[in-house]
Image 1 (cartoon, rainbow, N blue to C red):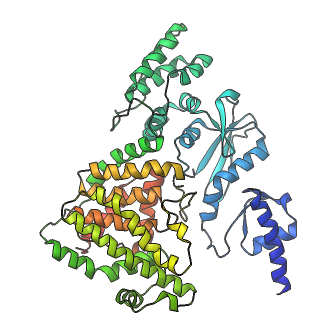
Image 2: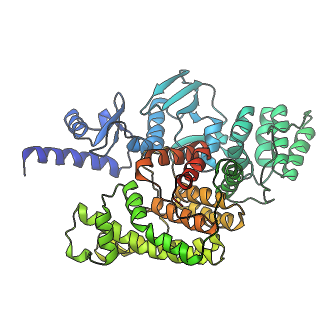
Image 3: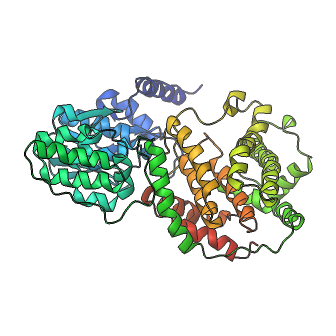
Amino acid sequence: MSEAYNKLASSLKQLKALQDEGIVAIQSKAMTRTHRERLLKNGFIQEVIKGWYITSMPGEKPGDSTSWYTSFWGFSAAYLSERLGDEWCLSAEQSLNLHIGDRTVPKQLLVRSPKGRNKPTEFLHGTSIFGVKLAMPDAQHIIQIDGLNIHSLASALVNCSKGYFNSQPIQVRTALSMIADASEVLVILLGGGHSVIAGRMAGAFRNIGRDLIADNILKGMIAADYKVTETDPFEEKPVIAFAHREVSPYVNRMRLMWANMRLQVIDNFYTTSEKNFTIESYMNEVEDIYVSDAYHSLSIEGYRVTPELINKVRSGDWNPEQEDADKEHVDALAAKGYWDAFQEVKKSVLRVLEGENAGDVVEEEHGDWYLSLFGPSVVTGIIKQSDLAGYRTGPVYIRRSMHVPPNRDALRDMMPTLFDLLKEEDSPAVRIVLGHFFFVYIHPYFDGNGRLGRFLMNVMMGAGGFSWAVVPVERRNEYMESLEAASVNQDIIPFSRFLSSLIDNGQK
């Protein structure tokens, strides 16, 4: 073993000790200069700002944002606490987003603090923190989530700007739906004498159908001798009806996003279906397109496969137990898993062609697709059987994406809601576009979500009378960018047009 290797191993041991302590933001003082420079040179850490580092993966290409986006919230919490002590709190708007489970990485994180400098601190990849010099909210209205000091939910609603109600109506309505009783906001309104805001809050709750809360806010303020004029801060009524009792914020937000996005999909999915086919001819076309579909879908995920390998696996000439466990073996295992999953997806397509509800079919069978996709890797011992137990049990991050998928508890609310929405939806285009989008947005599995999302899309294609569509690897960047726009900015138009173009471009 070379001396250089021993030195690097020693530095990695220091880094692991910090990681074991849960440290995300690594300060210069946390390790010696020698260890720090060695780890930096070999790509195991990267500098965020002078004297502050995060862990990274060796071999990351210049401009790769994955390590930073996965570290952003933990780094920000540690950095702010080091610089400002306890005297800081995220803005009301950002606090509100975190309360509803939206952990999208912002371009600029607004922080209020009496120590604020009213100027930004630049971080990596165009992100920054802006410290606004403002007094802190009352301590009783500040809570901590994952080391981040944020407004309580009620405080965030009372203190968020009037403009935020219309710029981010989905976020605000979701937060409003989490309030169970008027007393939660009244204590803040009365304590600060906020008569104008009280009128806005009453109007906001009435907008989502929570008349009892709205009435009690008005009664409480009037009883304290305040004059209150109720005003609706939203420009429009909500597109869904809210339950009168508290429902999971993830479910409410998802239903709001679906209702808002579906109109954009309908306006931007230009292709009409052609249903002049027999079930037999349709299934023959699906079989014929397999090699192309497998090649492109696997290539999009970074596997190195060829039509020859795909056909070899398809014909049964490839035996995974006779191969060496190298990169080519992993690629071939992925091809074998894709072939096995494709057989299951064909059964699903046949069911929807025979008239079954596509939402029901996908809910019942998507787990079978997943088991087949990774079954070969279990057989050869690359992954454990327990990895096939079902939905993920921990956090997951999407490479180079500012979108952070919902936590494990949220996805158990969101997946049944996705299937309910698919069952209820009467537009084939909406089922195709939003079915695929929300599946990868939720990211229910540790791996395979992109492939499974495209399978789901194509089951919806069949149900709507569209032919199987292949996402070309040559258009991967466009595909991923359109998904990012929908995930981060709730702009589903680019993704709608992208999927529509796959059919327009002769893939019928």
